[in-house]
Image (cartoon, each protein chain N blue to C red):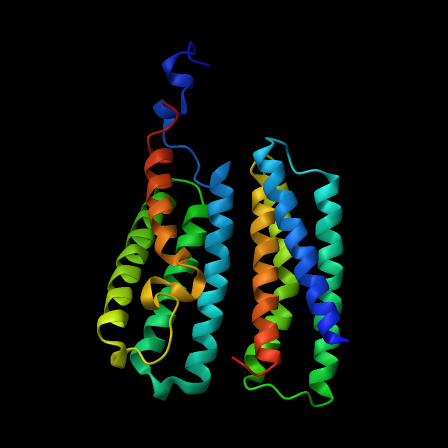
Length: 145
Length: 120
């Protein structure tokens, strides 16, 4: 592989797809969280929004973020990669900010969201996932060099 | 009756997840064995949803009916989607993709147990 002309290298033609190899596992995990967060928010908003508007609104935001991140990571091309960077970064900010506030000011977060206490209700996967996502975007973005 | 099916689903999905992970660790592509295990796990998952649905229809009480029904419907879609996603790009990682599906079914079933008994 190393002796191929430069033009044959993916690094020369662009980034590697994010949804192949181990990236497929990442997309699968994102898909599970997209399903879990969106479904949870849907039930919360439909049945008891008035009990905790802030927590349930954040729940809905997290669902949308996971959903778009899943589609972006599963997609190909420049705009999908760009969208993946934005959503995964938002996800990281979300889990850190919501996690910190839910620990420091639990009275403002009376009801759980996916990101409460850094995702403790989901085995802290929501905390680890964005770091893996950003690492994977960086790694595939460099191409095969 | 329902409890027996619950633990069969957790067992089948757990075995599927372990086998999928083992294939990735051994650097092997997802094979017919994994497909067979996934099919078996899917069958018991469907049986679980049907039996639970019937018990709900005849009046088994749960706190959040919408959530339980959502779980029972959603859970049967997990393994077919995971297998389709894995088989569309068969590498050593395909087993891990199926494992994610197996783990999801096991965790969803554990949550169903809690909701079924009224503790969550």
